[in-house]
Image (tube, rainbow, N blue to C red):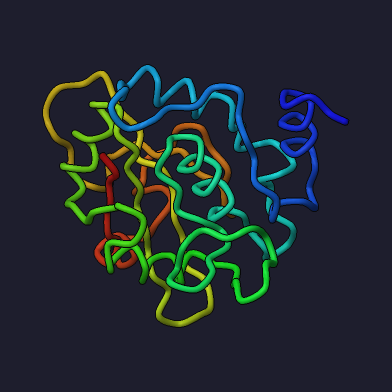
Length: 195
């Protein structure tokens, strides 16, 4: 039987078990938020790890945001059962949620997440609350999602200048959202936070 730390390391290093939940050594819960805790949780989730690297056209942005949100006590599940509650992988009556499916459920306020603007998402991240961006792909089965990073700057940049942590076609610990999404996609992107 693997220790929790060994199980975490094994899942992060595996490129075929993205469907299994990842329990990180460092976690955070509502009521104990700070930017340093948010970054401590994120720091364990290496976007270049095999778990998140793309396989051809298959990408794992939803797995990255699931792992992050789960370990922040604000799960946006990869698997949902009846009533859209988080479910174990492949449980009877459950379904896997890609970025498009999760986008729609976030808009409905599922799992305690609330929609906000890009600047509010940045302010939430600065205060240690998990904040996500989500783009719904109207032309295909899957959109894109990632994590809004806190920054040390004051003021509020345009959405294209927000830094994000993400997996996908490009995996990065810190990249401008405007480098990830085109201007057209950025205009369609929504932002969410969890207290």
